[in-house]
Length: 300
Figure 1 (cartoon, rainbow, N blue to C red):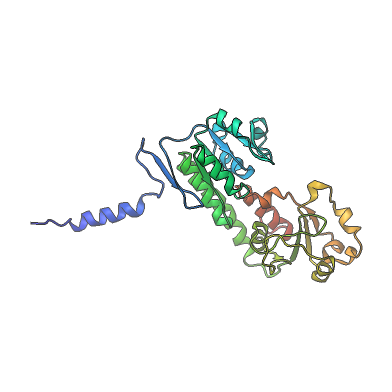
Figure 2: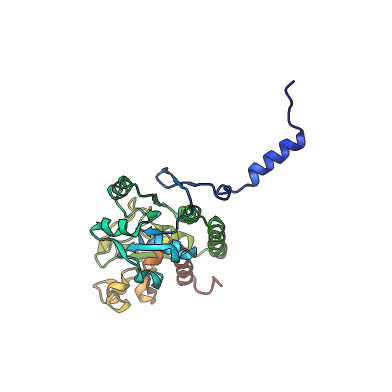
């Protein structure tokens, strides 16, 4: 005679299935993760030698306390300072395969700026490659979790993500009651390339209580004409190109720009573009800084 589980047993089974974290695994069992390309990656043990193929990946790894495991980085990696001491295995010309193989990595972590041909080549050499490619702020938090799971530190990643989410919530809660939403122009370079729909910075401007003048452009990085910008008359100008010599004074000296509201009211600010363009934990630093610039005194 077939026996059915008791009601109590069913409840326990259901509760256990609901309560167990998605990344829970039996100690000693393989780590199995699915990356942003929907590729399943299986690691027999937690990786001890990791290569970060992009700057944001290095930042994620170090934020999770995994710096001692990072054995190679990309040429553009500059944060935190410790990455500057690590071997560069990915340059503007692509991966340096000899150096990568010599380092005997357990795991390589890629990002959107790494071409798919490179990922395919590395996998053809029987290397484990995890691809991250977030499209929005929640996607960044997801990828921090993904990297933590792959590295065998899911608890650390969960705490990091929870902390970042609390900071995001603090900004959005402070901004929500405000009726004033200043218009914002974010300058990527002096030829007036900016950020449009689909860029991280466009999302940050909205979350921080601003209105991006290029939000209606269905292109993450459009170029505006000087005439269009003067017509938009932004109330705030952010200089993402400040690191390349563009200053508040040089902007004010541009023909016709003295009539722009942001210039007249001294609301032109240098901005560290790494805080807006790198999909890693410092994106929340960028959000907080932006909220303070757009709405002084609102955020504690």
